[in-house]
Length: 189
Image (cartoon, rainbow, N blue to C red; front, side, top):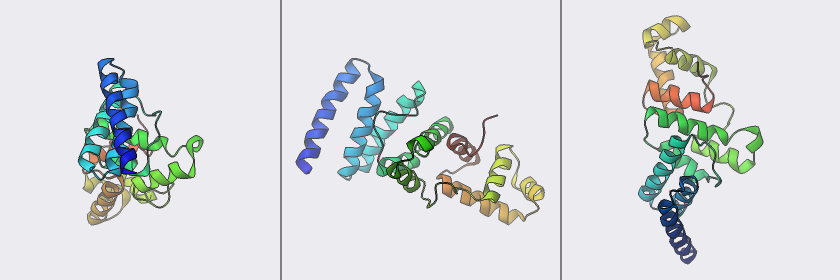
Protein backbone atom coordinates (compact mmCIF):
# COMPACT_ATOMS: atom_id res chain seq x y z
CA UNK A 1 0.00 0.00 0.00
CA UNK A 2 2.86 2.37 0.77
CA UNK A 3 4.14 1.94 -2.78
CA UNK A 4 0.68 2.77 -4.17
CA UNK A 5 0.48 5.90 -2.01
CA UNK A 6 3.90 7.04 -3.19
CA UNK A 7 2.91 6.46 -6.82
CA UNK A 8 -0.38 8.32 -6.37
CA UNK A 9 1.41 11.16 -4.62
CA UNK A 10 3.94 11.41 -7.46
CA UNK A 11 1.22 11.50 -10.11
CA UNK A 12 -0.77 14.09 -8.18
CA UNK A 13 2.35 16.26 -7.76
CA UNK A 14 2.86 16.20 -11.53
CA UNK A 15 -0.79 17.01 -12.14
CA UNK A 16 -0.64 19.81 -9.58
CA UNK A 17 2.34 21.40 -11.39
CA UNK A 18 0.52 21.17 -14.72
CA UNK A 19 -2.69 22.69 -13.33
CA UNK A 20 -0.76 25.53 -11.69
CA UNK A 21 1.06 26.27 -14.97
CA UNK A 22 -2.22 26.32 -16.89
CA UNK A 23 -4.04 28.25 -14.12
CA UNK A 24 -6.74 25.59 -13.97
CA UNK A 25 -7.89 26.25 -10.42
CA UNK A 26 -11.10 24.28 -10.83
CA UNK A 27 -9.28 20.95 -11.02
CA UNK A 28 -6.43 22.12 -8.81
CA UNK A 29 -8.93 22.17 -5.91
CA UNK A 30 -9.71 18.50 -6.52
CA UNK A 31 -6.03 17.56 -6.74
CA UNK A 32 -5.36 19.39 -3.47
CA UNK A 33 -8.20 17.45 -1.82
CA UNK A 34 -6.75 14.18 -3.07
CA UNK A 35 -3.32 15.20 -1.80
CA UNK A 36 -4.88 15.93 1.60
CA UNK A 37 -6.31 12.39 1.58
CA UNK A 38 -2.86 10.95 0.85
CA UNK A 39 -1.20 13.05 3.56
CA UNK A 40 -3.80 11.87 6.06
CA UNK A 41 -3.24 8.25 5.02
CA UNK A 42 0.49 8.75 5.58
CA UNK A 43 -0.13 10.37 8.97
CA UNK A 44 1.07 13.86 8.00
CA UNK A 45 -1.63 16.14 9.39
CA UNK A 46 0.42 19.29 8.78
CA UNK A 47 0.72 18.71 5.01
CA UNK A 48 -2.91 17.56 4.86
CA UNK A 49 -4.03 20.75 6.58
CA UNK A 50 -1.96 22.89 4.20
CA UNK A 51 -3.38 21.17 1.09
CA UNK A 52 -6.93 21.33 2.43
CA UNK A 53 -6.52 24.97 3.44
CA UNK A 54 -5.34 25.92 -0.04
CA UNK A 55 -8.20 23.98 -1.65
CA UNK A 56 -10.71 25.79 0.58
CA UNK A 57 -9.19 29.19 -0.16
CA UNK A 58 -9.52 28.51 -3.90
CA UNK A 59 -13.05 27.19 -3.45
CA UNK A 60 -14.13 30.21 -1.40
CA UNK A 61 -12.65 32.66 -3.90
CA UNK A 62 -14.65 31.01 -6.69
CA UNK A 63 -17.81 30.29 -4.68
CA UNK A 64 -17.52 26.50 -4.94
CA UNK A 65 -19.20 24.36 -2.29
CA UNK A 66 -19.27 21.08 -4.21
CA UNK A 67 -16.30 19.21 -5.59
CA UNK A 68 -15.74 16.49 -8.16
CA UNK A 69 -13.89 14.52 -5.49
CA UNK A 70 -15.84 13.12 -2.53
CA UNK A 71 -14.25 13.90 0.81
CA UNK A 72 -13.63 11.10 3.27
CA UNK A 73 -14.69 11.39 6.90
CA UNK A 74 -11.05 12.10 7.78
CA UNK A 75 -10.91 15.08 5.42
CA UNK A 76 -14.31 16.33 6.61
CA UNK A 77 -13.08 16.10 10.19
CA UNK A 78 -9.94 18.06 9.29
CA UNK A 79 -12.06 20.56 7.35
CA UNK A 80 -14.15 21.17 10.44
CA UNK A 81 -10.96 21.95 12.38
CA UNK A 82 -9.42 24.40 9.89
CA UNK A 83 -8.54 27.76 11.38
CA UNK A 84 -10.02 30.23 8.91
CA UNK A 85 -11.58 33.68 8.80
CA UNK A 86 -15.25 34.31 9.55
CA UNK A 87 -16.18 34.09 5.86
CA UNK A 88 -14.12 30.91 5.65
CA UNK A 89 -16.01 29.37 8.58
CA UNK A 90 -19.32 30.13 6.87
CA UNK A 91 -18.05 28.61 3.63
CA UNK A 92 -16.89 25.47 5.44
CA UNK A 93 -20.31 25.23 7.06
CA UNK A 94 -21.88 25.37 3.60
CA UNK A 95 -19.58 22.62 2.34
CA UNK A 96 -20.29 20.39 5.34
CA UNK A 97 -24.02 21.01 4.86
CA UNK A 98 -23.86 19.67 1.29
CA UNK A 99 -22.84 16.32 2.70
CA UNK A 100 -26.14 15.94 4.52
CA UNK A 101 -28.65 16.97 1.85
CA UNK A 102 -31.19 14.26 0.98
CA UNK A 103 -29.91 14.03 -2.61
CA UNK A 104 -26.49 13.12 -1.21
CA UNK A 105 -27.78 10.99 1.61
CA UNK A 106 -25.53 8.02 1.07
CA UNK A 107 -24.70 6.28 4.30
CA UNK A 108 -21.02 7.10 3.82
CA UNK A 109 -21.63 10.84 3.33
CA UNK A 110 -23.94 11.13 6.34
CA UNK A 111 -21.54 9.15 8.49
CA UNK A 112 -18.67 11.36 7.33
CA UNK A 113 -20.52 14.54 8.30
CA UNK A 114 -21.55 13.05 11.63
CA UNK A 115 -17.94 12.11 12.34
CA UNK A 116 -16.69 15.50 11.21
CA UNK A 117 -19.09 17.34 13.47
CA UNK A 118 -18.62 14.92 16.37
CA UNK A 119 -22.30 14.12 16.67
CA UNK A 120 -24.36 10.96 16.63
CA UNK A 121 -27.55 12.19 14.96
CA UNK A 122 -27.17 14.45 11.93
CA UNK A 123 -30.57 16.03 12.57
CA UNK A 124 -29.90 17.08 16.17
CA UNK A 125 -26.72 19.07 16.08
CA UNK A 126 -28.03 21.61 18.57
CA UNK A 127 -30.78 21.30 21.13
CA UNK A 128 -33.86 23.50 20.78
CA UNK A 129 -32.61 25.74 23.60
CA UNK A 130 -29.12 25.99 22.07
CA UNK A 131 -30.74 27.06 18.79
CA UNK A 132 -32.72 29.74 20.65
CA UNK A 133 -29.51 31.01 22.25
CA UNK A 134 -27.73 30.92 18.89
CA UNK A 135 -30.50 32.98 17.25
CA UNK A 136 -30.18 35.59 19.99
CA UNK A 137 -26.38 35.57 19.63
CA UNK A 138 -26.90 36.25 15.93
CA UNK A 139 -28.96 39.32 16.89
CA UNK A 140 -25.94 40.61 18.85
CA UNK A 141 -27.61 40.17 22.22
CA UNK A 142 -25.30 39.93 25.21
CA UNK A 143 -25.45 37.10 27.72
CA UNK A 144 -27.52 39.14 30.19
CA UNK A 145 -30.04 40.06 27.49
CA UNK A 146 -30.29 36.44 26.41
CA UNK A 147 -30.83 35.33 30.01
CA UNK A 148 -33.63 37.88 30.43
CA UNK A 149 -35.25 37.03 27.09
CA UNK A 150 -35.28 33.29 27.78
CA UNK A 151 -35.90 33.54 31.52
CA UNK A 152 -32.80 31.55 32.42
CA UNK A 153 -29.74 32.18 34.57
CA UNK A 154 -26.69 33.93 33.18
CA UNK A 155 -24.62 30.83 33.99
CA UNK A 156 -26.99 28.73 31.90
CA UNK A 157 -26.56 31.07 28.93
CA UNK A 158 -22.79 30.72 29.22
CA UNK A 159 -23.09 26.93 29.39
CA UNK A 160 -25.32 26.85 26.29
CA UNK A 161 -22.89 29.16 24.47
CA UNK A 162 -19.93 26.93 25.37
CA UNK A 163 -21.82 23.86 24.10
CA UNK A 164 -22.68 25.65 20.84
CA UNK A 165 -19.01 26.54 20.34
CA UNK A 166 -17.95 22.97 21.07
CA UNK A 167 -20.53 21.39 18.76
CA UNK A 168 -19.69 23.77 15.91
CA UNK A 169 -15.95 23.60 16.63
CA UNK A 170 -15.58 27.39 16.84
CA UNK A 171 -14.27 29.85 19.41
CA UNK A 172 -16.36 33.00 19.00
CA UNK A 173 -19.92 34.23 18.56
CA UNK A 174 -19.18 35.48 15.08
CA UNK A 175 -17.69 32.14 14.00
CA UNK A 176 -20.62 30.24 15.55
CA UNK A 177 -23.13 32.38 13.67
CA UNK A 178 -21.18 32.12 10.42
CA UNK A 179 -20.83 28.35 10.60
CA UNK A 180 -24.44 27.88 11.67
CA UNK A 181 -25.54 29.99 8.71
CA UNK A 182 -23.42 27.86 6.38
CA UNK A 183 -24.95 24.70 7.86
CA UNK A 184 -28.45 26.11 7.42
CA UNK A 185 -29.18 26.32 11.16
CA UNK A 186 -29.44 30.12 10.92
CA UNK A 187 -30.96 31.89 7.95
CA UNK A 188 -29.21 34.75 6.23
CA UNK A 189 -31.17 37.97 6.56
